[in-house]
Image (tube, rainbow, N blue to C red; front, side, top):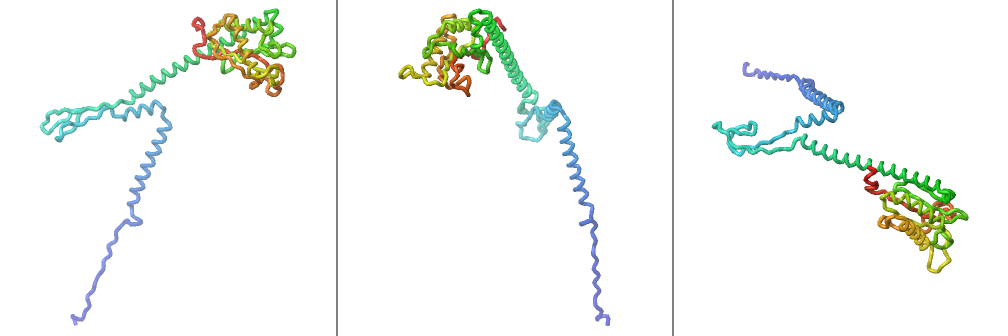
Length: 292
């Protein structure tokens, strides 16, 4: 009967703590929180520190020298000297790396040099502007004080542009600068240019002279147009300036522009469009040495 007893099998299930509800995830979460805290602290530091403090931190963590041992044996590198197993010193190769301070010094030097050049250029520009304003005022006073030219002062326009000091002599109704359809100046217009020359001669600037006409087509001569007429009138002005003491080497260009640049664009037939422009060009140096 004992042989007919069936064996009894006992299964023991070993329960392992953790799993889905264990504590391993807490370690990973703690690492994540720590990393995020460090990240936000880094952002806060970058936002709250000044440029100089950032440069100081960068300089602190920048290596200044790197050493490699020429000995293949064991031993550490101490102060650029390697020790072999016997304690003897062996030669070491030291490679110097430029520090942040050196690079910064070179940048500061270049920045300073550039700044000095900009300051000098600004100084020259201010001196030039003041000189132009002074000369334009002198010219206006000279014309007003002349009994013969004061009645023509409304035909003289003086302004200071980006290109330089511009003096324009314009025609008026019944009071032209040149005889009709010619490049022959009236006597009063010639005296006006001579008065301008007495001021211009004091300045070292190069000079650009341009002639302008109105939009009325020129038909008095065959093969002769407003282009030739404006060029000839500009040349007539150049000759008066040269004969009045202005060095001819200062004449940079003489241009005939016909009716391409009217003074009154909406009224191209008006007499004021017929004019002579004398432009004292901006350039460096533009001031006499005694003026600095």
